[in-house]
Image 1 (tube, rainbow, N blue to C red):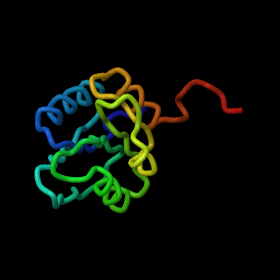
Image 2: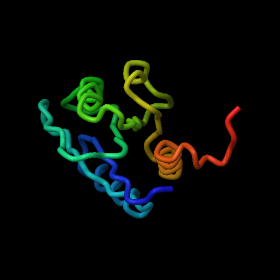
Image 3: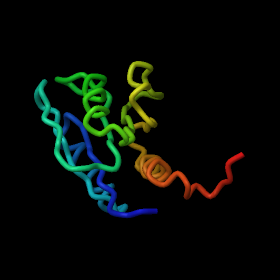
Image 4: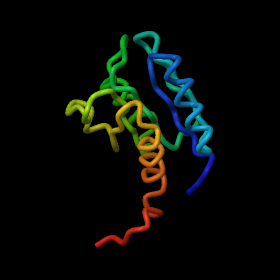
Length: 125
């Protein structure tokens, strides 16, 4: 697995950004937080390897933001984070995968498999 992947964390809660940044740093990734604290969000410059997008953003629409992220980072996978049991249908077209909040091991496994799909250990049929 490639380390030092840059992961953009998009959330409206600074505590979540801090928590997920710590989890990602410990796993060898470089987190970049994007706090959604107003309706108009300025996307960062530079490249990112993966985007973690909170589904329930208080002031902005996660679907609208996912559309903007897909335009700005067209080949970058988006992993949706939510406290829901499954991925909501409205964001599914913009997302690569879904992880429930509070499951850091699953989050890291999803990031690993998304960033390094060839390292899954299985053979394709």
